[in-house]
Image 1 (cartoon, helix red, strand yellow):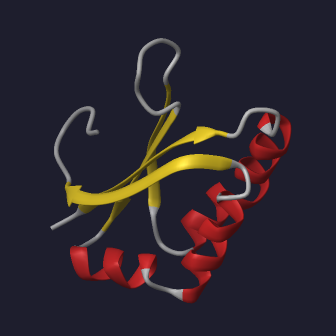
Image 2 (cartoon, rainbow, N blue to C red; image 1 turned 90 degrees about the horizontal axis):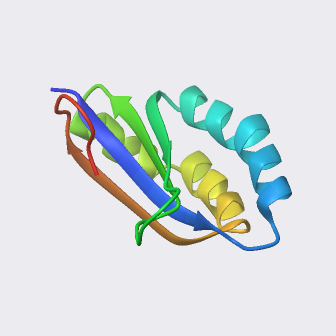
Length: 100
C-alpha cells in the first residue's frame, strides 16, 4: 500500500531567498532521486499553521522508512534545517484529497 510522507515547516525569517534556491535546486530533486514522488506543496497565507506543507508518495511503508533513515536523506534534511524551523515529518496511509 502506498504511503504519504508529509513534511511541514516555517521558513527562517531573512533566509527566504536562500531557502527557495535550495529547495528548487537541491531539496526537491534530492527527494525525488531518493524514490519519493512529490504530490503536493502548500503555502499557508493566513492562520496559525506551518508556513509550508509538502507531500510525497512512496510505494510502501518499509520503503518510506528506509528512505527517511538513509544517510542521503539525513544529509538532505540537515541542509534544509539551515533554512527552516518547526520542521515536522510524518508518514501516513495515502488517502484521497488534502492530508495534514
